[in-house]
Length: 339
Image: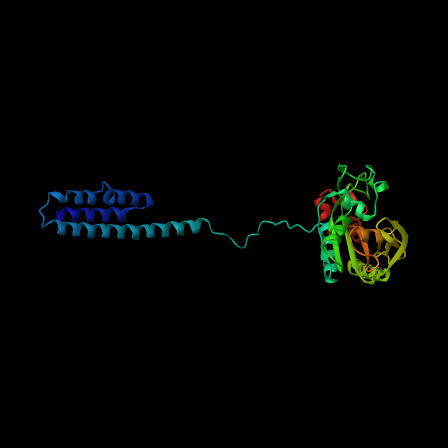
């Protein structure tokens, strides 16, 4: 029996040494160590041996098994190392070759303006307030001093979902929501997408972006509004930018004004961008109407405030010299690469 075990060991060693693949090694393992392998059969035949020989034969079989397993592991490592070397030779990379060109995108002009405006007003201590684009007419109109018979509530101006639910026509509803939920002082800007029933042309779109600002506190005056907007204009459009107010009417502010900025291209001399006027219309603004404060449970005898709002697309068109709003929405890479 000892000679048989020795023969199995030597034969297995020879087959392992001559193996050239992992598959050959696996076949050798099964042949000698598997459930029906030659060493396993020797163990199963030990029952016919005298009792005194069984421990000796069992020890020899275990030593042979350990020897074969060690040889299998050693040969497997050798084969894997060889395969890795061959693979590295065939898959080597020439680092001197030019790499594939990676196309890098850029931030969309509208997003650039929104981010810039956020950064400016956060630096002034404002908070960002965002709200739903599908809004209750109560917040979109009533609380902003726009009664049911106001022209802005006509179906030609607003997208109605039901009689009491609309796609917001401005981001002002978020101002009303904040005033209801938060006691003064309040300093917020409200960026977001708004919807109006406008025909698409070079300066209008039924879907566009707007940023509105609101400040409510004691002793807020028109001079605070003008100073804030001057600082914003200089930070956004250039340090030499000037601002002027023109009387206007908005139902939610009194007094109200349109704010123009000096043309940052020509410095006010007149050019193609400002259409020869030297000024560019930028935004609407004014002191918060006392009715709006009352509608939001704020006492107008104690508190006052100002509000302003502008279209992001208008700022982008002015800042980047874009003459057609539709270019911002057409996703033409040739156009967007300029920014």
